[in-house]
Length: 308
Image (cartoon, rainbow, N blue to C red; front, side, top):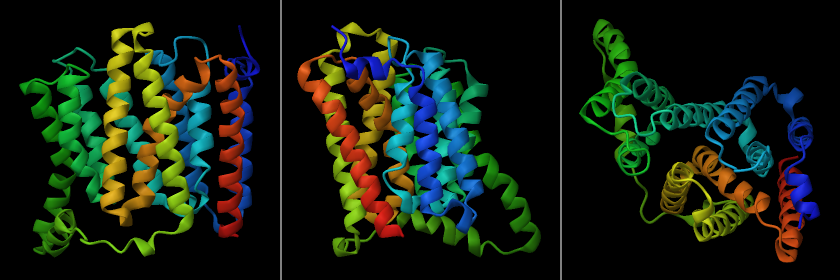
């Protein structure tokens, strides 16, 4: 029996509505006043690539645009992050890398694709060096979930990570000053223990807790019903699940990196939440669908009010 929740999730108009809603939130947050056009371009490109990830991999086993719609709505939860061009680039680079890695599924000879996937991670690390911590995680997932890790693809990934720094090294050799290089990589070993959690804003805590509850609900739903999905989809959702949980843990341990890392959480949480909202049809989930939507609007409104 299809409920209103299902009719909305399967509607073709839901993504355009979410896009208009996103632009409206950006305008209210100060898009024109603060000239956040490059940041909006990053989000637009990210949303387009999310459509590609969803369609090319059939993340939802029925025709639905809910994955990208969920991504846009969750992105609007934290308008304070709109101002960060570095955060927008981090989001875009991670989505490109994910899209490329998904194309390597069960292909241990896909050296070119792996090179470009890790090149994106490396380019992102020029602004946010801590994303390099995800490289070992991606290698693990390439072996366990994507089944594409081999000596060749591992070598390609390492070359991809090194390439931007190789070209920068030529410049630093020319000027004979490596101070910036050491300072950049020294940040990888900089941890704050114990961290003063009083510096975390109530808005950040609200967004974090809501995404955690929503994501865990999506994880539980998916793995309880994963037998209905193909093995490939289970592997890809395992990819999203592990990264989301690890990044959530990283934020809890080092919350000073909240702004760029919460974007990765949103990327990984969106398919899990979309799967939950699209492929359930009980009376409880129908009510939960509108409760979740209302809470999203409420949190966005609160954060907008605080920002303005």
